[in-house]
Image (cartoon, rainbow over all chains, first blue to last red; front, side):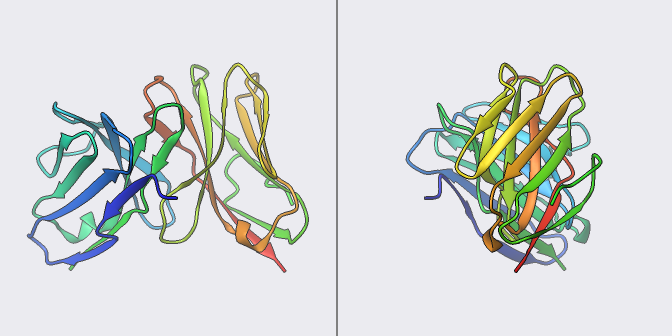
Length: 114
Length: 112
């Protein structure tokens, strides 16, 4: 069954608005979660590492003020795309590491900014 | 069927045949490798992993081979089924912190 859950699975928003995406680890605690972005027919690119109780660390070229990450509990990380623009339209995927196992991914959130 | 070259984007294979998907990694310091399967509109699904102290690992219908000398990774799928049609990604971990770096991906299409 699913190990990591994402919500919503898809969202459409207007340009200039903000969108929040949730990532939950199911029946395990995840002190670290990762956020990836995937454009059509491309590979996954790591955006940031979400750390429970501390600031997220962002990969080079990812704007931390645009992609706000909050990891307030051991089972929940949220990614907020602020002032979204059409070029932010993408497939956002989170992942979490379950102790003793590989990195598991959520089913992604398809964001479309109109 | 077999994907040749490092970044062949597609592989077409007859149902029942074996598939071989190849991947090259760039960093000799990588010590953990994973194969993921991604179906359309879904997140990556774990298939099999291997650490750098091994050169082969087998799972159910799948085998991963690691050649550290040439920095090459392959995924073999036995008796390919229609449900195996998907995009397959190899991923490497360089820093030991599960920040995975993904390859370009190979689209596998299974012909009935």
